[in-house]
Length: 247
Image (cartoon, rainbow, N blue to C red; front, side, top):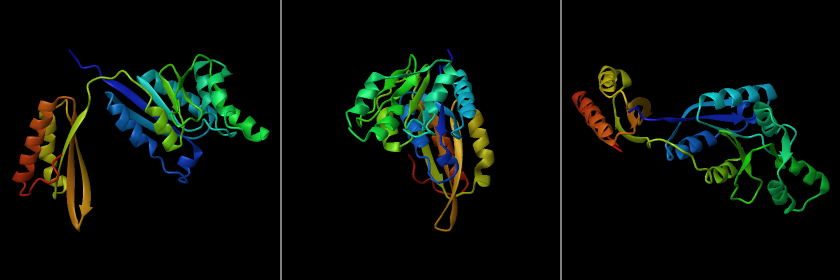
C-alpha cells in the first residue's frame, strides 16, 4: 500500500521581508517542527501585503496542500491585512473574537492604542483559535489554513500548540567528504536510482580553502537510509577520500 504523505505550504507575508529589511527565520522553524509530526513542507512563498495576492495564494495553497501556514500581517496596523484576506478567501465575514478581545483589554493602554490593538481580535467567521502561550493575542485556524504571527518568538509560541495529523516521520542521515560534486555525481545518480523512496541531496561548501560536499539522505525507511548511507560512504572511499561528520 502506498504511504500517505501529508504536505504543507508556508506563506510568508510581509513587505518588510521582500524589501530585505527583515530576515525571515520562520520557515526553517516551521519545516522542522511540522516534520516532527509527519508533515512535509513542499512549497514556500514570500508575498507582499497586497490583498489580491494574499487571497489568491491562500486559495491556491489550501487546494493543493494538506496544511497551509501563514506568518505575518495579523498585527494592529493598517497594513496588517492577513485576517481580512483569509476571510475573503473563504467567503466569510470578519467577526470580533471575544477571547482575543479579553486578552487585549487585560493590558490597559490609551484609547487610541486600544482601538488599534482591537484589530487583532478580528478573525474570519467560523475560525478557531491557535493559542499564544506568551499571553498575547491568539492566531487562528480556518479550514486547513493556520494563521500565525510574523514575530518569530510569538510564531513559535503559537506553533507549539498546534497538533497535526501526519504520516511517517522523515528521518535523515548525512556524510561529508572533501570532494567536488562533479567527482561523485555519476555515482550519486546510480545510488539515487537504486533507492527511489529516499531523497539524496548534495550540498557543496568551501572550508579551509578546500572544496567539499555534504551528502544528505532523507526518507521514512530506516533500513533503506542505512543501506544508502553505506553505499555513499563507499563511493567516497572509492574516490580516494575519507567520509567525515557521519550523522
